Amino acid sequence: MASTPKPQILTADELKQLAGQIKDWAAELGFQQTGISDTDLSEAEKELNAWLAAGYHGDMDWMARHGTKRSRPDELVQGTVRIISVRMDYQIDEDEAPETLLEQTNMAYVSRYALGRDYHKLMRNRLQKLAEQITASIGPFGYRVFVDSAPVLEKAIAAKAGLGWVGKHTNLLHRDAGSWFFLGEIYVDLPLPVDEAIENHCGTCTSCIDVCPTKAIIAPYLLDARRCISYLTIELDGSIPIEFRPLLGNRIYGCDDCQLFCPWNRFAQISQEQDFLPRHQLDQIRLLELFSWSEDQFLSNLAGSAIRRIGYERWLRNIAIALGNGTNDPAVINALEEKRQHPSVIVREHVDWALNELRKT
Image (tube, rainbow, N blue to C red; front, side, top):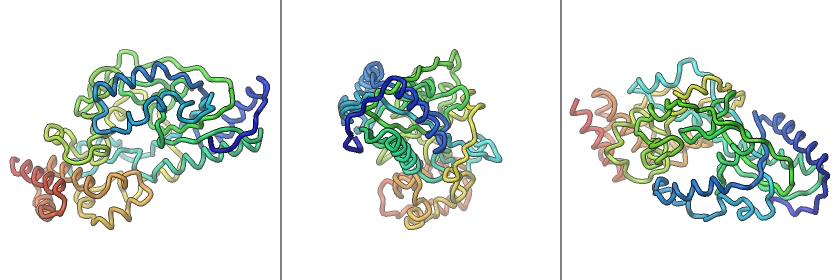
């Protein structure tokens, strides 16, 4: 826990009042929704264990590294009895529908969550302020803040807290907010009243399954991460399997297809957070421009961005594939040729693949 708490004795009415205040404070801090859940994640634990046993996590060994701490909050943070879960919308207002970028082979497609500044620090600071407001109201209590930074089953927790339901694409969905939002949590030792989970509204829709370029959603509510473009372009180190390279299209960091074509995202809200606005024209930028960045430019331009963590080698690897999936243009050929002597074996391999693909056309 983040503090050394003194015993708190709050009545049921005081806890109910506090829960309402927490939601009001969270809204003032820029969170669009807040819910409270208990810590029983036994069903999610069974699903996680089956998923891991099937090897669907690929090289993401950290998914299994912490044993039951991920699904048993009290083992991760001793004393936890409730979880405050929050949602922060990140959809930006774009002049052109982002899905049209997928048809422009000379342009780069970057997952919309990564266009602006990294959300982790922003949300973590806001959640810390929320915890401090609770402390100011009731005195010291036990808590710990998380934003995608520890073994936490955030989607299962958010679903229990009433922030949405887990859709067939395995993302969280809300009828009035779609899925373009980030999640964060505060583990607390306060026995606050819990919120009710909401009903699943995916129905018979299979849009996300049908549109997935690599068929990574192998069944409703079941994702094989090893086939997912987000995994391939962000999490996977080394060489991207040849069978998937043509399917990446111009997606150089992540993939949003299952969200872009989800009917519920018609109701998604535009974010008012300035930090989530695109930087360096990443929402509308040519592949060749990004491919020309030196490593220093990559590090400088993407300072404070979630993209920076993949490193320069994966960055060039991903863009080389996207260029190879485009048109046989002299400028593209020249740019690839210039990288044929790159010190990275991985970059050279993907550059050679791209050149071979273009020469077939």
